[in-house]
Image (cartoon, rainbow, N blue to C red; front, side):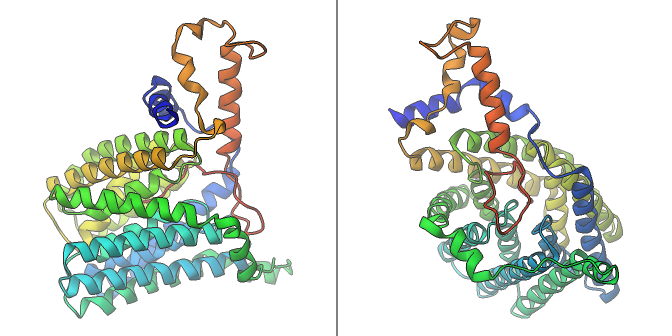
Length: 417
């Protein structure tokens, strides 16, 4: 009955209204948002200039993936930001190297899917242990999917080096301000011991549960996409992992709706860009602009951000492995929808039968919408709805990625890919 109630709540029209509403809770200052967006855009732009100077356009997508390390630790002090970005860079490099090696050896599909599943679960555990906040594990899964593209043995070290170089550029861009602080004699906040951060992040099995949930969803979503014959099962895995960043089942449903619908619309927008077979310089400029716009929008509405994330991801994919534009866009939309659906179903199956998990919004669609009390002492329905929305805003608030503080909920943010 508990899970049936959850499913009924997820099918309530209020879910759609929640998916359409922008995030209204507190968040980073406008200066912090703009600064983070510009640093990320600058990192990606410098990486594109580097690969262009080397004449290795084929590695541009992988180098730009490494530059997405700039999405982590944006609100932290320089010392912790540098440490976190270095760890993320290592993770991205390892994921691309592993999946590229499997592609180069033409590993069977079950082995590739198993590796994707383990990477998704491991990245989820790592993000929870380090308390990275969004985009969490999704960037690593995106990188793993890019690494699974067809490869020759010589491509494996080249791809890994490109990702590592991109992460190094991002690290330099995002921590360069420490030099200015030292010149101004400003104190630099020390980074907490990594062991203490991990111990706090994994206390009480806090990282194990999400990792297992994402692992199950990744395996199911990837299997479904593979069985359907779609070419990018990693996108289904990513869709499931992104949906499961929700703080509770209803939030997971909202994220799934936003990701699936936003990706479908974004794929339509990307189609003419892919079909135009644009020059490298134009694609690079578009990716940089889309990256900056994404960072400005994503904190307020995840679904709207997918309108820029999807074209950006598809353009990055096309740099490394040109493909049929219509097929690429369709794969992205279908894989993402299946992954999001699987993520919701797994979230419902894994939900604990606690009263706090039951969604009171399921009661808002009946005749009591006229304002009559639901029961003794429960007050007006409209007041309850306003109170619940305020609670969600607080629960989904954006909390600075301070390693000393456990982030309060999910920041309606995902990222990429």
